[in-house]
Image (cartoon, rainbow over all chains, first blue to last red; front, top):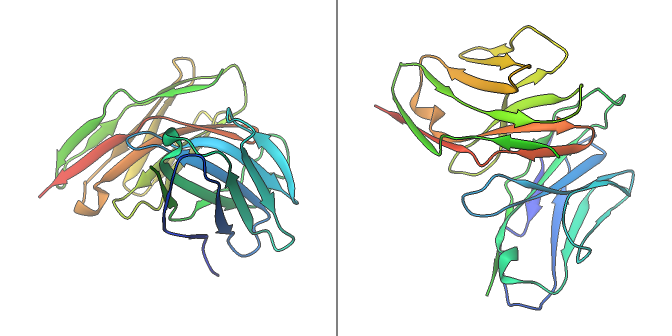
Length: 117
Length: 112
């Protein structure tokens, strides 16, 4: 069973550019969540994808968008990069909850470190 | 609004001793989950322990246990017999529905 992988490991962009980060979910997991972790902070929930549809979103502007593919891999796209977008971006995969109050464990990837200059 | 607060930015403990990390949270939901995650310097987040809000019994996982006080909205983590490999950032997290809320973390150092 392979774990969650993310690419690239590190990335440097300049303000105003666009970036795409990629995530391959753990085998059999069809739910993917993305988080932004600024230096010295806890992860902030960006959004979740389930069956290729957005299934919940945190307090992030529309320039943060995502995709999920039929093989359950996912992309996070950020347009018009700002200096404050510099952070570690984490992806986590899980099986979907079987009911509103059920839970399936999230497995995190190693993250992509994005630096915006 | 949901919030998670960790008031101890840094803590240290002697190897083999016991340490307790604090966490308080706020939510208007009746059903939710609470977690402690560990993030070692290699940065991959690992689940340490989880607690279902509807369960009164405190969760335990080997050397890790929690003290869940639902009325006080408190969720502390106790690490017994601390080991050098426990050195890491520890995050308290709240899950309601399909949203997760993390605290700012506690950096734990285990001293040989």
